[in-house]
Image 1 (cartoon, rainbow, N blue to C red):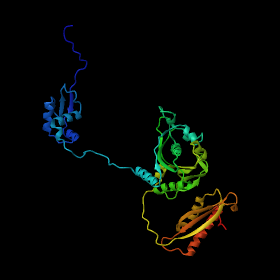
Image 2 (image 1 turned 135 degrees about the vertical axis):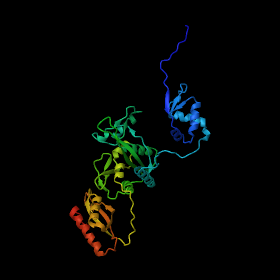
Image 3 (image 1 turned 90 degrees about the horizontal axis):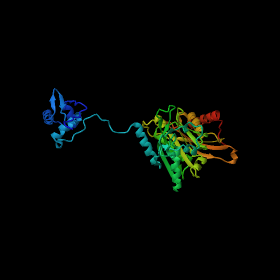
Image 4 (image 1 turned 90 degrees about the vertical axis):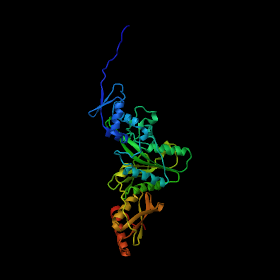
Length: 398
């Protein structure tokens, strides 16, 4: 075949870029003279006219401002780049208030002797059966993973209790005698609409076994509330949660009735599902709700100048009567003079009768501006006894 064939499907179009020396220097963090930039670009075959750079056809690599700045800097000399501070808008580093609260909570729990764990958010749907979750529970509806690694990681958890129980059971299998764990876990609650992302909520889960009991778990929960500055939380008996022992379980309520969590002894059947025969104590605290109710502002309170006086009370009541309710009536009846109400003894015996118990409480009385007289303390005592008899039918034990 004679002649020449020229394959030229697309016509070349000249690249034109704005000539902005100040922008180049800002981008490079340098101070290159404009005259040097003009000489450099001209030497590279570019034509600079009326504030625009006309790129030659053989320099297809020059397609944007970055490319021009790079060529200017290359010819000027990389060795002439001087160290300088960042000249741009940045955000200050640091944690948010909620992140700080989370860190402080973790530090407090570690200080109480608990060890922190981190578990996967993916679980098996069979885990809901192991914790005895009711078949009609809304928490059984989970976000399903479209490409799971296996059945054990096929859904996003709606409760962190199975994850805690798995770790406790593993430690028990390793013959660790005394274990106390915590995790600030994330749960995922799906919406009705399938195309909406689930609500992500944080839950503080606690787990213990060994040399511990119900009251130690209660104390840990109280310390978390104290750290959050939640003063008036109440503890009420809970008998309808299938994961917990019906007689050793309590809900934590904020002053406005918001449920802040639940804690108690794991139901023996649930513990047996994890091959654990010893008592296990667990808690699920709504971390987001606790933070929302938190009052972390600290106010100075001087040490009391005047002495306190105490009065002890013992009552015989029904077994199912909550001591917290008795404490609430006593504190309200005494008003500002009541500094503290504390349970110090519970007695059960055949002489009390079936389904009865004796509870003993100590009330601490103190005035901020004076020493209480015996008459004033006796007056408060009579008011407390009167309210207990009227509201709860309680009288002093003989």
